[in-house]
Length: 130
Length: 332
Image (cartoon, rainbow over all chains, first blue to last red; front, side, top):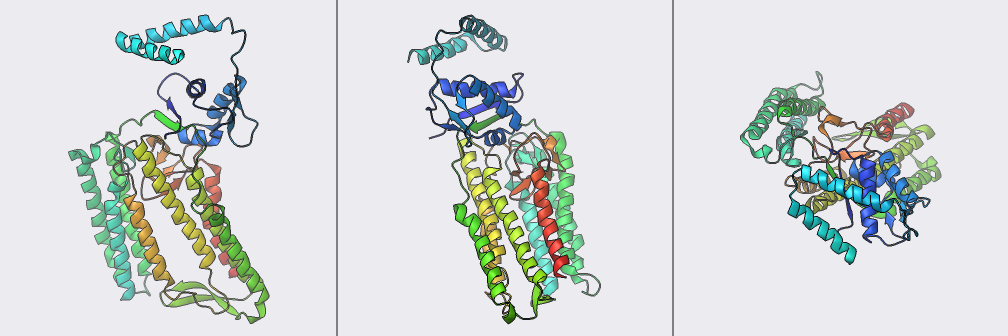
């Protein structure tokens, strides 16, 4: 079975460290890793992606600040059990709504069809229901 | 006559290997330039390959007469080998220049597995440490049997056995041990680095499997070299090689390894080598300070090359070039 993969695109405007944060967080939220699992060490992930150490180190640092990773261990980054913050950040839901609208507008402007966008949104929604 | 034939055979081997070279790389690389998929088989790509071969073979024919030079005038063998390599290198560089107008942008998408690498060096710690134990044991044996050792021992071998000798002194004997140990360390480190300090392709899966095979074979080759430095250390007490046919055995092993390497190249694997053309000098030297990899796939020839922006590359080069030179000075 293939391990969880991370994919970055060097040609888009989003900084690489942000792409790494988003991709790893998606896997963590989806439950691809159990608490106690190890992510690859900074050097290895940087090598495999062909990016500078600092780029990956910064991404791991952000994920550690969010409570997903423990970087104190010597062997890579340890996945932590992370509870959902209670109460939820009051700014999170409006921010999500705004970013989602912006994202939909961006992909529509890029020529992605409405049915395709709808299909993707439904897939995400089904994942949430599960 | 033997030298002339041997030189000619080497010249031919170099020509045949280099002639086949364009087949050994990713299909979207040609003369160290990233090209569109399928370009190599297109009329323009085929013409470039044909021209490369014409240049290389013409140069080989021009170099061939050096094998007939009398030994007093010039050493035919090194001249033939260096001349052969030089003409094919020149053909490669010229062909690369001719290919650059067809260059395609490198795929900006990178994929990596989110798991610590499961692979280890073949043979594990034993393969990496045992050669040093062997060398240490032999050095200790020399210390114990110092008086029994002859007053001089060989430091160079030609076609007909030892041809250069040095006197038995602690600096000469233990200096040679230290040289072999350092060269062994460099080879074993490189074997380790092919597994742990080179980029791992994770997608598409066939390319990932092919690269894993290739990396493993490369590591085996480098480990083998390291072990040869340890086990092939000439015994000082009887002044002969342990196995009379050792060089031929070694050549046979190298040939088998080379065939396996060629067979495992990813000539039909798309995806390039995930390095940008702009970081390759002459298509031979990789210099990228943003890339933490110490080793990357060679774009000319088989195996791996150093990332010269990585300081460790210079340490390794200094060891490979400097240690034997230093040893020669000490032993002399």
